[in-house]
Image 1 (cartoon, helix red, strand yellow):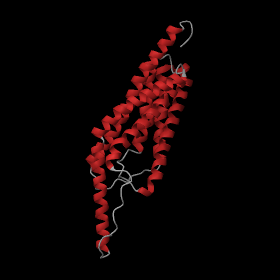
Image 2 (cartoon, helix red, strand yellow; image 1 turned 90 degrees about the vertical axis):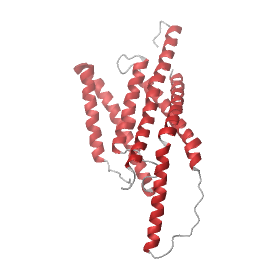
Image 3 (cartoon, one colour; image 1 turned 180 degrees about the vertical axis):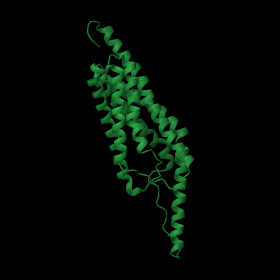
Length: 258
């Protein structure tokens, strides 16, 4: 059963990846191009200012050839990255579904899939992005990329751990407080825990003061849109595939639980 769900999850992830690629080509790449143009102009201005300060002409070094062209990055590179990312998340989503099935109330496959997709979107993307919002590739100091990456993935891991703990808390409170009240208490506990985490982790703000606010806003909206497309597709498409598989198993063996 798990293997079949994993295959369906990866298939849903592939479909989500195709949709995300089309969306990002239209909504995301223009802001990336503008950010790269800004970074290039800023570097040129810094080099000119340094040369003028020292009373010497700018460096005569020949520009280094690009290892990967911008056209490749925005084409096959973007497509490959999104497809691998989405297929991997689809597989992980299927595993989470298999673990949650039968443990979160008496939800049918579509409802459970939609619930997990909503929780995943909030815990994996929305909450971490509040603390560490996405920036265009050219924004940020190269020397701090390792630190920034570690902080972001640490935030994702803590958010997921807090979400799992909140789910366990809800299960423990369920007999005493009922489903609705237990969910509210668990949600409040998750929110309090993540506020504490956000306050404890260091802030990162390396966006130049002169960086166009509109470009930054467009990039972050595109990133949010792509994540929303991916999680929505996973929730709806995987739910339909899982429900169909469950129905097929029930018809094949009506006296055994699906």
